[in-house]
Image (cartoon, rainbow, N blue to C red; front, side, top):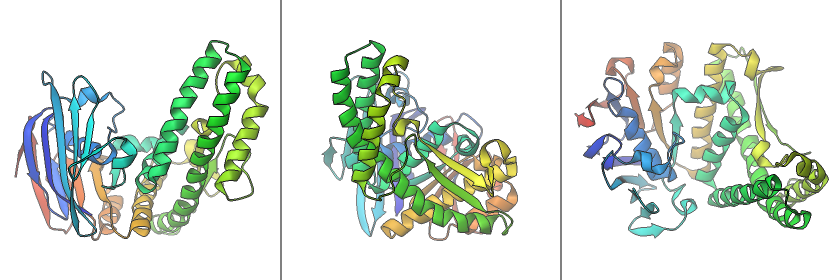
Length: 363
């Protein structure tokens, strides 16, 4: 999978810009706050129908402009495609793939597959459960469109249920919401458990290699309910329905939802020690590198082709040894990286370098 053209219009600090990308390594360099990360955000938007910065869509529109547009042309399985996202200041965003309107994000996500690596990803190891849930969600949704639909539906129903609980609503309506949550939430949990089982097998070998055989990484899906012994999706739905019924009195008293995939986590450990709280800074960086490379390996294993790798200012997060390992593991992968100076990316690989200054790009 390779992107050859990126076009942005009235996006962030860009007025209008077309970039022709190399199929190998692309380095966007320049001072801070010039627009380098905005280009990665544009690609992310075209692939995931949203931003990785957790802000409203309207904040991606250039100040004073009525709308923003992002267009990405790419090759997937030897066929050319175009993803386009139009963001109006008022109204709903428009998503288009190969000239066809996509009514839902789940129709767009997964066509252009990406792996994003930013300094904020250090929170994957040291941060709270929400960060690790988001990692799972972003990964699985690119492989399983049905997952994104189930997750979106679960979140909407969960909001309605919490609204009901906060107002002290009746039990009969609560039962209706719990029935829907069991169906969609059980599906989400089944996908997450399956994903982590596959990712863990890859990650164990990756981590052992990066650490020189000195460490063993363990990953575990930590659910908010007792996990079923049967592997079928229906077993997860039944288990969640049972726990929701058992916790109904407590939820009514607490006036909030206490169980479900919105409270799940991923356990990361080196040997017998939990990574969160015990891992050193170096060990945390090794785990993070392991997770991102394992995510790429899984995408390739699942689809038969490499995803696009987006690296945002990671030269400041990874030491020379880990940087060398990272780029050495990226044979055949298109990489788009940002940094303050192109000399920070010292690897033996043909690269296209672009200087970014004030929302303008110079080759």
